[in-house]
Length: 175
Ligand code: 5GP
View 1 (cartoon, rainbow, N blue to C red):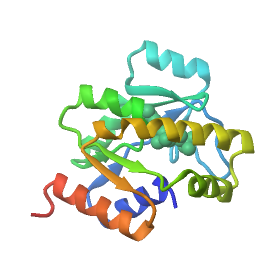
View 2: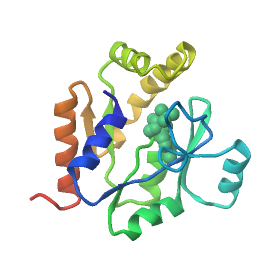
View 3: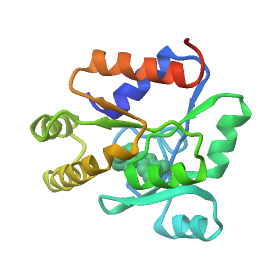
C-alpha cells in the first residue's frame, strides 16, 4: 500500500485535518475526479498559474507538473484545520522555505521490488511509466535527511500508526 493509502487512513483517524487538492498537468487516471483528486490543468493553464504566482510550490515529476495552489491552502486553513500536503521532494523544499513551521514527513517506499509490484498492482501506469517512477523514487531517497521525520512504509499498519502519532503530536492533540 502506498502513500495515498496511508494518508487516507490518517485523515480518517485524526480529526480536523484537510487534504490539499493539488493541480497537475497529468492526465486523470480511471476513476479520478477533477476537483476531488486533482485540479487537472492543461500545460497552458498551469503556466498561467505559475506566472500569476498562484502556487505555494510546484515541481516537475516524471514528465508532468504538480503544484499546491495558495487558494487551496487558504480554503483548508479557513476552516481552522491543519493542512496535509501529499507532495514530492522538490515541492517539500519550497514549502520548507515558505512555511518554516511546516512539519515534514518523508514516507519511504520499502524497496524497489515491492514498489514495482505496488505500482503494477495498481494497474494504472504503463511499464515505461513505472520504470520512470522507480527511478524518481530512488533519487528521492537522497532527500530524506532534510525531513523532520522518516517513516518506512513496509508494513501498512505500523506505518499508519507512526504517521498518526507524529501528526497528533505535531498539531498538539497528544501529549
Ligand atoms: P501521482 O501522479 O502518482 O498522483 O503523483 C506523482 C507524485 O507527485 C507523487 O509523489 C505526489 O506526492 C506528487 N505530488 C502530488 N501533488 C503534488 C503537488 O501539489 N506538488 C508537488 N510538488 N508534488 C505533488
